[in-house]
Length: 287
Image (cartoon, rainbow, N blue to C red; front, side):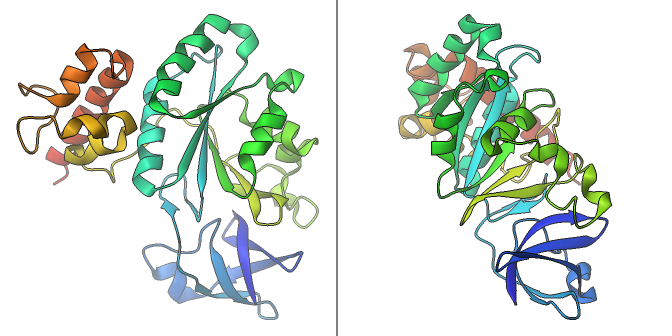
């Protein structure tokens, strides 16, 4: 049979196929490979032997947290409590560009700081990202968010405490993140906060909830290529005088000129520098 892995708990894989959920192990050879089965994978499995036989080719793959075949990243931040982390947001947006998926920014808890919401909107609407304002506790903005999820396999990503779980519960209109997808099948599924699960919204429409995190690793991107994944930087790279310009210390840099002219926000540029220097440092100490 063929199906989709929707959860992985204690080395057991839960596969959705034909409206049913099957509990399977993976063949030894799959576990020995560098990249074993992961949530989001389309797989061939033997439902009688309860064994995954083959992982079908992936369209996309995120290493940390591990999830495959995602088509869209929903970057959730809060207006306040916790303070919006725009550095992490810019990492997430760059990574979405890198793996070639759509990105949507959701600002939750808008009632706590409308001024901050406006500041964030000003930066990112000019870049071209879709922004959705929500107040999950009052269910504000949920219909617009549902619209953005249509025909996508979306991953919700963001710091702990930004309200991802509340948003998901609003979308499904029940306490889905507390119940877990497989709570009736296996009691170990009751608390899945450290695991990723796919929640089915409609046919071919799923949501992956990631555990909250305080860092977001994008080391797969090389520092020299980073500017290409800041959407609004692209058109200005060709104006750089030097091929291979790092866009930081060089003279006659198209990106630095665009920042000076207000075409690129200072906030985005400063975050670019911080991410670039972090990637560069890790590259130099890799060996």
